[in-house]
Length: 282
Ligand code: GUN
Image (tube, rainbow, N blue to C red):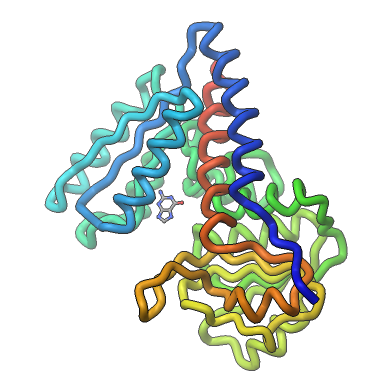
């Protein structure tokens, strides 16, 4: 079998076109959706992610303000900045790029962001809303995965979704979003025994662990949907996902590539969330 390749880049482009139309409607009403991106320190991966987010904002007419803070910025000063942004009615979204330097408590920072401006969906209130099946901002990467599968015409109900990885940003919310859509859900992780025997049962397999090509063809059910959230460099410095694309695409029914799969979807959802936040002020 040769899998259908899910073109995340093309799907993200169509979402961005829709977002741009909504931005134009807001501009006609005198509102320019605005996202503030806060970066502390100089993590090279963060710099690339943030550059892509800012560029995407520009392309759809969302105003972005990047605040770059030095590595030795105090937690107190980041909290104070967020407090000011929370009360500024011109700001619709606040994103603090992770990871933060070790001396800053990530949880304290994320809890400071107003849940109404939490376009990353990381605030405990938004996490709780997801857990309880209530509406609220949802983390961009798992939302992007769901939207990508929906727009590819794939269904969820009754399927066994297996999520590899249990991070707060991807694995846990991903599992909840599949549950919300009536999947049977398993989360597997580094301490799981017989991991391959579980991944082989997956109708939908999502990998979000950050290990180059760890998902091999013998871990995948024939005809299944395989979603690769990983963005890694292999030992030759080549960009690759968690999934061994060349062999798994011979077994799976559907597969997302890296690059050009989940990555562009994450950014499209961030724009969508920012514009939703601006729309909610009307
Ligand atoms: N670091 C890695 N992924 C993300 C993300 O989606 N949002 C933020 N804020 N930081 C990240």
